[in-house]
Amino acid sequence: MLAATAILTAAIVIMPVIAIIVIALSSSNGDWPHLVSNVIPRATVRTLLLLAGVSLATTVTGVITAWLVASCEFPLRRLMSGLLVLPLAIPSYIAAYAFAEFFSFTGPVQSLLRALFGFHSSRDYWFPEIRTTGGAVVVLASVLYPYIYLAARSMFLMQGRTAADVARTLGAGPLSVFAKVQIPMARPAIMVGLTLVSMETLNDIGAVEYLGVQTLTFSIFDTWLNRGSLAGAAQIACVMLLFIALLLVVERTARRQQRFASQKTTAAVHDPVRLKLAGWKRWAATTFCIIPPFLGFAVPIFVLGGYAVHRLDQFLSFRLLSALWHSIIISASTACVAVTLAFVLSYATRTTRSPLTFAAGRLASFGYGVPGTVLAMGVLIPLAGFDNSLDAMLRETFGISTGLLLSGSGLAIIYACTVRFLTMAEGTIDAGFNKLSPHLDMASRTLGRTSSQTLLTVLLPMMRPATLTAVLLVFIESMKELSATIMLRPFNFNTLATLVYEDASRAKVEDASVAAVIIIAAGLIPVFLVSRSLDQSSHP
Figure 1 (tube, helix red, strand yellow):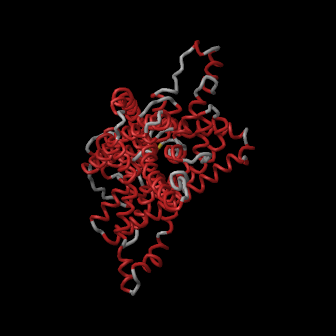
Figure 2 (cartoon, rainbow, N blue to C red):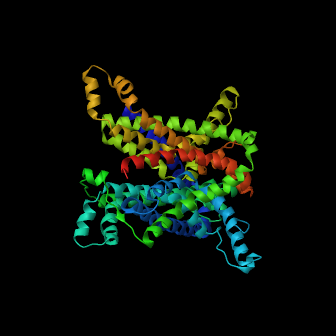
Figure 3 (cartoon, rainbow, N blue to C red):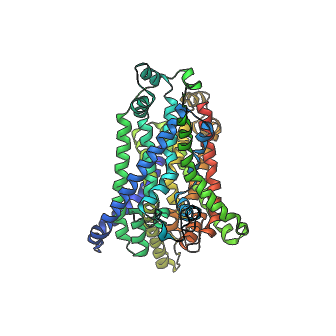
């Protein structure tokens, strides 16, 4: 029964991808030649440039800051180790709105330049334009580097000092040890973080649209909604799926080819010996670690928080409260469904240990790599097909019209968010199960309890912390999700994310600030949990 449920879950997750491929291959309206000639090449180049820029910037920032706080001693190191995680709470589209305001002609930066140097207009000086591909790289890198920072910092802490000390006794300097010993050992974790960064970059729609960067994701959105070509959007989506598959292959290959064993001692774990930086190097390290959280967290908080302070009355407006209620309903429903399915997948893998169940778990984890825009299209096609078939059958049989039961409601958003964040829930639940010895199940069974009784009375109570963490993570991520929500929401249905998007699209970032602040405040909860977990594990 568990194995069958796991396979059904995998089928539900993979169905949107299959629907997209079927629509793309069955199209006969001649969109493909136009897309190949005019849309896909330009969008692919922009996407590759954006991916390359964000990947390089996040890798350099994340790896160096992780090494500094894990292996070096400098002023404010402990404070920096926590601050560097904060940009995770800022969705990329909110960061784009804040950056555009902060670096605009009337923003504080250019206003300060004009005041200092006596400039009177934009013709008197040059200032980089944020609404470019380079600007999008800066925005996305500012909020996505913590994925690599967290992965690299964990690996640097797990390595202990043994390998580094051996290299130092052989005459290697600190930078040589970092480049030739610590980086290669941390490469698998860095590749995992880089894959997450790449997927989030491909998933983004709000930031790239606002900054005027025509990526493949934006092209799907534009082709489907603005040009009315579902088949053309599906064909672009297939190109994006090739990108996702390539990223997953590269990530798994990198992890497979990099293996090492780290024999940690108690001293290596609980009493780390950090390199004490002296002179200008210690202040340079502090400055380097301050810049990323300043850009990725302080700037959005300064801009949007400043706007929100002058609009406190909006916190009680019907428009905001309605969007908040919709966000809570969608996020809570998604969290319950995703965690339930994740629990089934993890428990099935734990109890059956069959290749089929393992394969089902792998398929179910594919959803996180699919951008929300692509998922929205893949979800809408089968749901609309079901709605139309049911409506036609009931009209013919009973003369009753059901309308759009699934595709015209919030259920479509819940479906898409469940597929996208199921991996996050499954990973958290699976980590909780891995901490429980299989002998607990065996002991319970020898005492006469059935597998269902063992699950309900023994495992579930012990899994409560992992389950609550999974619910919280999926809830927060669903609240921040924009790509799928903006394409699947019913008419006159706003969440906090779509409310921010609508106001910013109308050049009313000030009005979007209150909803944005609520999203950021909610996003700080998992960031706090991550920071506390890192502090407890590192024992600085």
